[in-house]
Image (cartoon, rainbow, N blue to C red; front, side, top):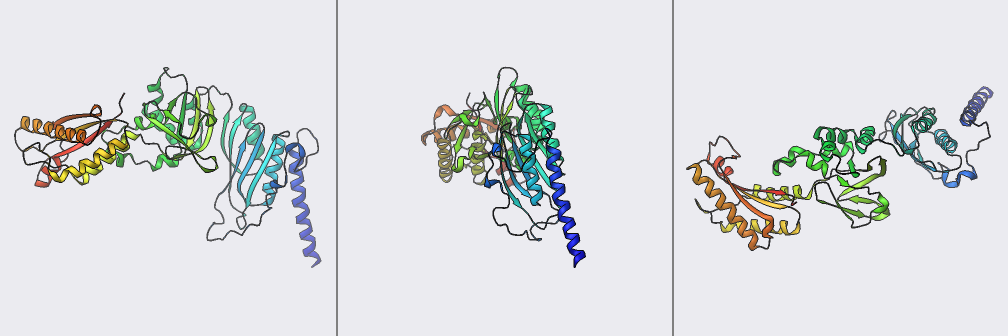
Length: 417
């Protein structure tokens, strides 16, 4: 029994000594440091274990699963959040933060997980730092705690362009690759002096199914979608209010929505990190890819006529009565979504003479145009063109179903310049 007590005492003494050693190690000025100091404006909210926490069930969290903590760094404050697997690590992170900004404010809200002693700790550090020396100072301090660092720090006042900054952020590597592949930076050129980019995360880019978009939207170009994420000028979040409209490089509008707890959305996408500054603009990170309204409208229209084609009397341009309710839906969508011009495309099968098929497809497209005008769609938005048998959907035609698929009306929505 005495031996056990001895070992326990030795263990506790070693733990305390190790922690005190960490504190002394970090005090580069040789002054005495305490865990919570009045100069750092830290109160009882910093006590990581102030609320009771339930043990983590092994079925829910593997012994070796990575867990994540977060540091939001600035010259005047550090906010610590997320999960750690030991109270000592939480305390050490607070000490390191106090050492990095001795005259600043440190706040901490940790969840102390149990049953994950062997877990890998991912410590994600984001915010602005002065220069590369300051970056290394911050990273080295936290890295000495034995955790894996995910560096998202950005140098303040950097001369790097927005595209270079995006390239440096690990969670934006995919959109950075797409910007580069599409030549977006070259397309912008020197005409626009500063830009604001709403940059989707890797997860958001992976969720984008460009093939599915192209099934109902003709000639969808990734560069068009990417430019829909770029707004000329610097727009920091403090400048945005609910209902603000931002005009993109493509000329279309992005709508700002401010919700509960000051959450900010651009269209339907949540801003997860804001105001990342570069030499020629600002970056906001968002959680989904933004799709231009014109593409959304085109997809909606072609899905309607794809499942329920527009029909005409045999060999004539006269609309079948059964197709008028379908065109009523098309008109409603166009009126509710005023952005974009609509090109109505007529297509034919290969039965009959080619020139006759071309004229018939043009007449049918014109008949659809006239009907949409009668339903209240602005005529200035509409145009009609016949392609005849030059753009067969099924080629070669073998069956009657193949020929029926080629006799069709399709829609192309373009932005009005």
